[in-house]
Image 1: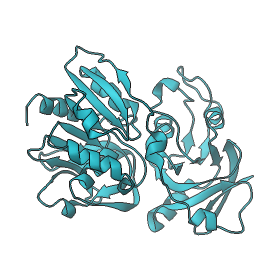
Image 2 (image 1 turned 60 degrees about the vertical axis):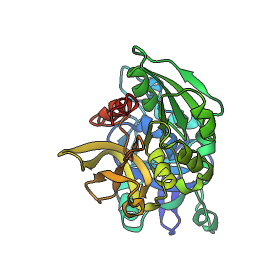
Image 3 (image 1 turned 90 degrees about the vertical axis):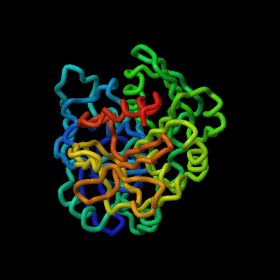
Image 4 (image 1 turned 45 degrees about the horizontal axis):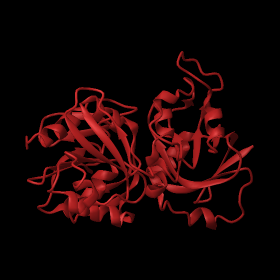
Length: 352
């Protein structure tokens, strides 16, 4: 027997899966029907206990080729875990994945009720444990902190283009997903992935044609050094930011960010293009959003969320920079917005 205990005192009884031991984290839900491997290996979930709203998880096993990065989640919550995966690509079961990476989990809980609680009260902390704690002070005081340095690479890494070479791109790793790297390499880019604390001076002197700002976890306002470096890059070299990179850019330009009630996590988030006529279905994973009014005349909102109207993209006129909150690399998820990588390369080529 195991328990998921929320910081508001609610207790859910279930069965232990994954690693043993207690684990405290920020409980969030993701609505993806498939893509649990990409979710579990997305560094943007660092410090969080992830709950899947889809009731059956693990049915196609673990396929390491589909990993997006290192597993950084604090815990995993599902309604039903499949013990007998069936897929020709499957290498082993999901329970082994969790155990091998020290991730505690729980199954057999009512994920529908949990989702309702988070939607009504907002994201909250929780603990996966074998005994209900008498004192919830440690759970209630938990904060997701220092996660970007924890998930970023420690030294530069070079990846050659997988198509005829066009440009040299520097990808700043705040917790990057491999899908970004694949998308750039497939478009003829040699990519150098650099740590989160790389200076603007080092990037500008490297001879890069453009800078990619990756996704990542946590509160964007924590990353004061990174924000200062982005401020020095914008206007001097073409920049494309995704997710956390989008938020950090807004902060570098004098804007503001706010924590959402329960965030956007899943592969079915509708985004409206304010410069066109389409609404795109996108993959997202974030708990913070850019405040549109804070941008003033420094940025122009280009995409908004069709559900709640929050900012999903910003253009910075005459600065060769644009950013999006969603994931155009979309692993897992729809690939409708992959054209944004082509727009980035066009920007490098001089097409404003």
